[in-house]
Image (tube, rainbow, N blue to C red; front, side, top):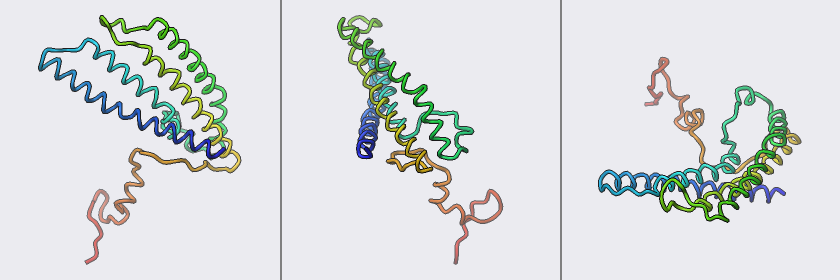
Amino acid sequence: MQKLLLTIDSVNTKLGQLFGWLVLALTLFVTYEVVSRYLFSSPHAWAFDAMNMMYGTLFMMAGAYTLSKNGHVRGDVLYGFFPPRLQAGLDLALYILFFFPGVIALCWAGYYYFEESFVIRETSSLTTDGPPLYPFKAVIPIAGITLLFQGFVECVYCVACLKQGDWPSRDKDVEEVDLDKLKDMVHADDITGEPGSATPNTQR
């Protein structure tokens, strides 16, 4: 079971990192379109659709990755002060009551949304001969499935925390800078002097 959980975590992490490259692709594409439009007076009618699809794909496929890294926004003003078992109990209840029904509905509706688009070979109506939309709409159920699997993983971790009294260890990835860790790295405790002074305490 542990191996399966780590595999799902690993797959969603790799997917998140893979689709994260869309940030660079989107940046380069927007730059190209701006240069083409304003310097060469040669805009592309399909550019707006392409940008929306790239951003939408990035946004949807980052969901499971963000969940695996506990990166989704939460109202944790009080949550952070709760003991691990209470946190796990709240998380488990919320997953069962809200997360799974919502994600299952996303997968179900997303599949039919894609199927209808594929059958009629839907294209964008914003421009003449717009790009096809069904490959983009296929991302909806795929993203929902990755979220669903990651949700099962999170529930197992919640149950483990309820049993052990502490959260199990997780794979680490890129994180925001933690101020306390940064202070430890630069040995901020060794700094002396008046408040606000940055004079290091050196030995001569």
